[in-house]
Image (cartoon, rainbow, N blue to C red; front, side, top):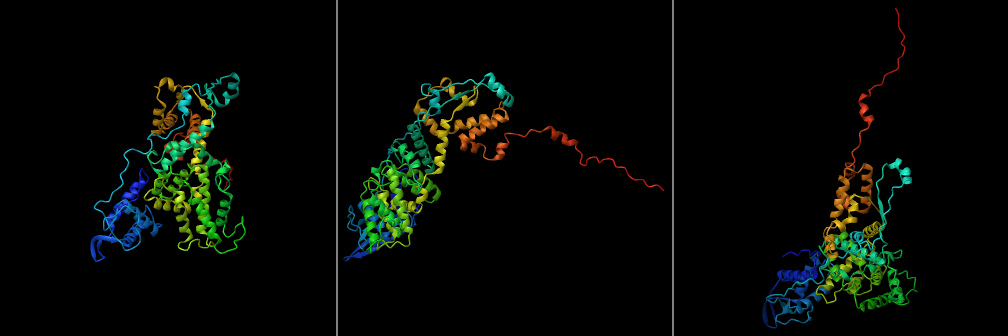
Length: 529
């Protein structure tokens, strides 16, 4: 049985647990052993189980080569507790598994974890702002629409010569976006971006969408310093000053600017122990309990480095600002210590890099209910985040630009022409049957681009538009919806095909041009005999 990559999806931790048990049972060598003058068939020693499972986990792409032997022992303890293995006397349920020569065997059937039949979270689509274009245009009480008839004689005098006949139009002013509106847009757009990065049909199976707060996302995007570290408004949630000084000391070792040089051997070990003790007593991990399943799903994308980094960028935007700031400071210290060759060993049994992961992985990611593979999963994620912390803990520019463009479009005044395709939304409430907000949001999530594509096709195929007017509308559409525009018109050649060049009179007369112009008459000299 070959291991397979468990990609993003619901119940990923359960799938990994079940597959690990199946691989372990299928591949673990079993033979006859003799102990205390008694022979036991189809069994293995504890050390043999550790050796085999350790190699199995390191070769499995779902876990990777960073799995330690101690982590393998911890996993076998959980196997013993859950009756995946038992000793040769049939005892199980405890976690007294040790690296020794005690004999163990498999029970007739190892219990696999069942998948929940009912989704953990609600199955509603990702909520959109309730004040979108359709609702705002059909609700006369909430949107101030001020029609301005632009057909005065002065206007015609000034512009008729330049642009010709101008049709009657009106300006539609959108209402002012409130702070809550902006936060709701950031939330919906960020969740859609995350769903696309994970390649999921819905986020409802891996997280509770309603628990995400848009104000946290906005704060994490804009309230940052020059190093892209979040700045907190509430100073009471800041790390203690002594802890910040200790972390800064180890991060900048041996150039400690905040404190004097150490006066005794082992000073750096004491400082590190102080930092580790503080983070070890955190009641909730920095990545929060609510987002545990989301980050576990990102682990299925680590073989695609850029995709995984983009997904983690968005996931970290969902954190409360105080958690994101603590995570940024901790990751920066961990990365600098692991790469600092001048830093003395902080532990006698392992290197500084492995020590950073082992010490802080639990305070960064863990499940509220102790997951059986929680330690292995957190170790793999923290290792990847430590190696790419500068990219992961920065604001994703593609998301930021997309949301800001959308917000700018919502604030922009629109020009509405009677009879035009863009003006039909003003009378949609009269000509079309009313739908509930829930139905409209569901249709919008499932087919978000169909109306835009139809609108673009109307601009392209409308023969009543002049070339100048068509270019103007296409340019406006490109600024508002670049992705839809690029899908329909991907190359400059496809754009040029919409505007065939007109043949000029000069090109028609080119037929009559001679290859060699007439030469002026010159008088020649005659020779007479």
